[in-house]
Image (cartoon, rainbow, N blue to C red; front, side):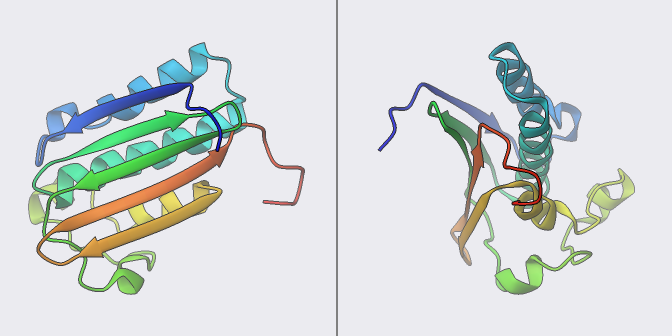
Length: 149
């Protein structure tokens, strides 16, 4: 197992659209300072933003944690919340259970989970109704060879 070189956790408050994107921006800033490849950085930025927004829109509160080793970055989104009754359905593009408030603000298009999966090299979601959801995403820190992703 690779030694973890950096760990950072961000608490995300439910319904706090005013601070939406702050955790993802902080992750991006730190990784940019570390010189992470720009293509990899873009994918991590998209996935972390989507994860943060999902916590704000759908949970009762949660956290976004990044763990970096010399070869990969793992991003964990953990929440206490209603859970996801049908994960397969939730993974469909365009499917959303976002509130009217979130939709009025331009969120809730049903692309969050699909965008996370699309941008991560590995994606895993576990959810229990009435308990919450954990999402794990892994990103190789060196870009994949052309056409292999």
